[in-house]
Image (cartoon, rainbow, N blue to C red; front, top):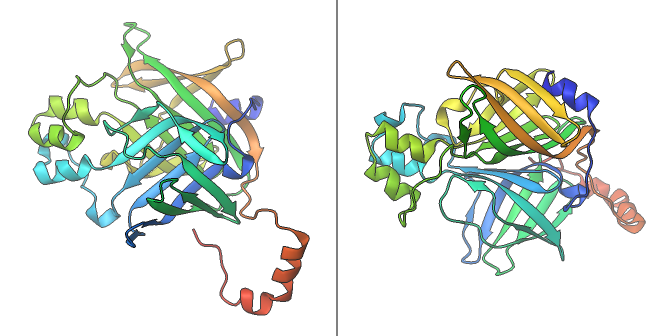
Length: 313
């Protein structure tokens, strides 16, 4: 069956770590640091399922590398590409803080080790680093009501040969938006070098660069019915392509798992996902509750309060 057919037949809503106001696709408008500097240029997306997160951080489009075979990139391009960030990680919400642990990442070190102190008003979610190092302004992206799907990738294998691949990752769908993480199919040999150092030292070597960059975090827009098209990705060549491969999905009710069958280099592949959540229809509302007094104040002062208002994304 198609993924749309599966989602419309299956409804799985297990216990969740995060509150409902945290579910959806958020884009960062700005990060401000303790030294007084701010950045509103880096492209950053955060998609939140009930118990895990997908995160993508890229330079502005003008500073990204062009799509090309890895062996054609020179050292400067490899250094830029190695600065991309994408990851999937399980999360836990406690004491108004969201913490992440484990997961699958393009980078070889954890660049964002602090938990997040979070509060949302309207479509604005503000994140404070407990250390005071930074504060981030996130905006829930407008979406029509639609599916909330969170699938954590357990394994990928070739059914003909039985070969297993070490990929971790996952898929999150939030109405009009979706994101996917596919980890490296084989672990990197242990190294004390950074990803950038390893990439630059492998300049010109397709084999070594493939081992480093055979990882994907992509954010897409669209719908289950029409498909999702990649808009931003750690893989430059993925932009403009479908997020998901052609193939079929199967629901294993006994194990609570989803099986995806697709073709890779003319060979069948199967991915097994653990279900975090499947809800066929959820509203991703931009508003949040306020007290009756607050609503009365806003209405009474709306002539000036709403002089220039609009939805910021």
